Image (cartoon, rainbow, N blue to C red; front, side, top):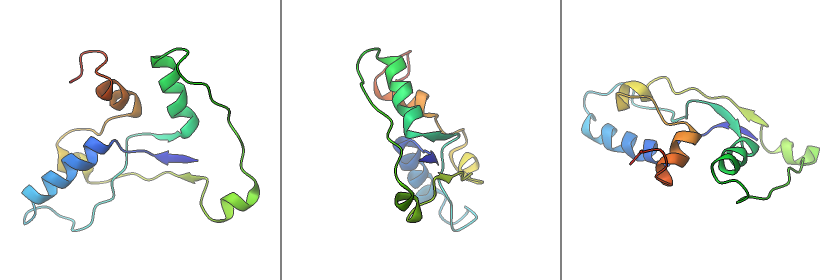
Length: 106
């Protein structure tokens, strides 16, 4: 599956900013999406690169029935989140570094 994954801290910060800007913020509906279209394999690869030898995984391709209930790719862009947060959302790699306090973040 490929999705525009958003970091949970970006979701929380967005909720806080929406509550602060409730009367001024337009539109009344906002889609939240991360900056890049990525797969679960991409996430696993990022973890493996950051922590060599820590993750052992095997990619399994689902059968056709699996994709009847869900799209394989959802490439969503969030048109307003950057305006709301006054910054870019974090990539998965940045989020992992943030969570594991690597590279001076946090």
